[in-house]
Length: 232
Image (cartoon, rainbow, N blue to C red; front, side, top):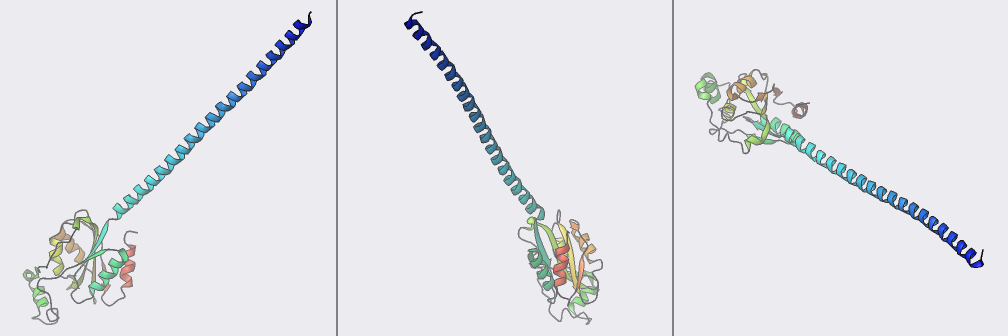
């Protein structure tokens, strides 16, 4: 074998080994690049999934908050206060619940003498004795945005065992459909009696709950506590 041929064979073997080594390295590099690409893709998908889940949670939270707000609705405290007793409890209830208030005011307002039930000729005594005189017109029975209130408290003094009749005009002239109605009363000794049931009959609509009577000179904290307990 000639020297040139030996050198040529050595060179050929060397080149073959180099090509095999290069292919192996290229294969490993290609496999590494593929794995890296797959990992990057999976990471992107995981990030997108996390972001989507986070967005969904935010939407769900907002939806729940909106549902709670709609469920709670708005509350209104309507009241007639002949001598300044009922208004104290009405204000306490409204403050406790964050509610609006609406005062019932007769067109022909009662004076102290009118309210003296011990006198036979006083206005209130005559109205008690003659039912036809109890149709007391109010300055207004219309509540602004009435439809926005889901819960309505109605407060009044007790006159001869029933609700003071100036309240009747308001109840008869409003639609309580879809509303929860809760009466409350003040008196020196009489209980709430059937006053709430009578008003319910005048209304003809609404979900009327059992009412509460307060001693006219008791601490209004009791009204706050009562109002806070409603619905629990």
